Length: 284
Image (cartoon, rainbow, N blue to C red):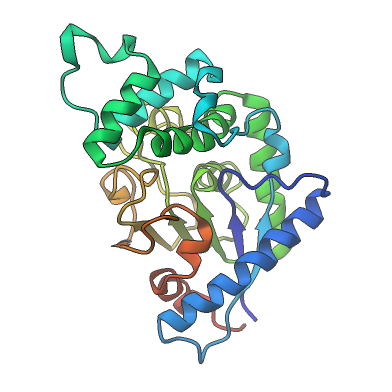
């Protein structure tokens, strides 16, 4: 059976589990969703690839989100600035009200403005901020966490021998940097789902390697095919078309879930993901 390495996103720390057990638990949970995705694509006659998870959440301890909107006050100054940069992409109005500047606006007020513009409640958008931004910023702002997470992802890929990597959310950042830092891993196919790689300021401008002179990200060495998948309402997968900033070969976008628009379970259960994987995951 072909195997894929999955580089997980935020919110996947498994309390009281050793890293290997945590990786197995996540893989077991996502395997069934991927099987549903193959069925959704009409590909259930094919063997569903086995999943190996590159688990690094334990290396970001102290950076994970709290999961509730009332934790916004605990965001650091750097995290708050990153939130404001992300909110600009999500849909902040061009000009703030009453002569304010975006840089000086309280995060809660900015969230409220954007939520109303997007037809969401401020509580829902606040939960997304708290679940997502601390881990992303905690990774990008800490050289030691960054190094250890990339090493773990590279180690898992090397041990698995997988040629295909599926990278979700923050995992797309970690995988992108790991594939650049360790070019001899043998990965040939990269599939990013729900990726924030292109978010200006908060993510894109902090990448290692940095964007090139033309303002574009570079293709990881050895990658023959890069597919990007975005749920139509995913507020993390922004800007929507990753190919505008990176050498992506194919971009796929469709509504998948009105509620769980950013979870890896949703992406795996979609026929879009299965269709992107299947040509590269035949039994070897």
